[in-house]
Image (cartoon, rainbow, N blue to C red; front, top):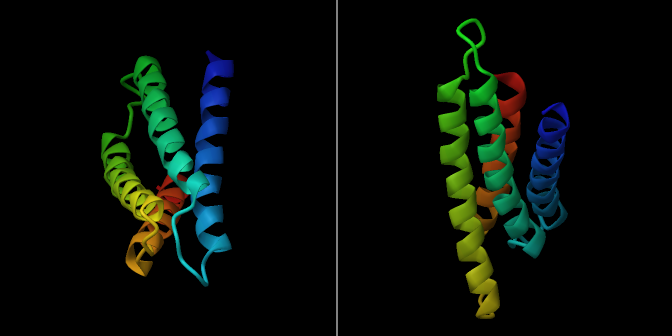
Length: 118
C-alpha cells in the first residue's frame, strides 16, 4: 500500500509540474499546452485515487479533510475545463485567451499552495 501511495503521489506531483511549468514557460505568450492538458487529467485521476487511499486508511483519530479535498477538486475542475477549452481552440487554429491560459496556471498554483499550507 505504501508503494501505491508513493506512485500516485509521484504522478500527482508530475501533473502539477506539467500544469504550473507549462504556464510559466509560456507566460509571455499565454496558451494551453498539450502537457498542461495531460497534467490536468493526471491530477484528477491521481488525486481521486489518493483520496480513495486516504479514505481506506482513515481513522477516528486521523480523519480525511473533506473540506480541503472539496476545495482542491473544485479548483481542479476549473483548471480541467479551461484546459479543455484551450486545447479545443488550439485544435481549431484559434488563439487561446489570456484568461483561459492564466486560469489553468494560476488555479494550479493555488492548488499546490493549498496542498502544502492547508
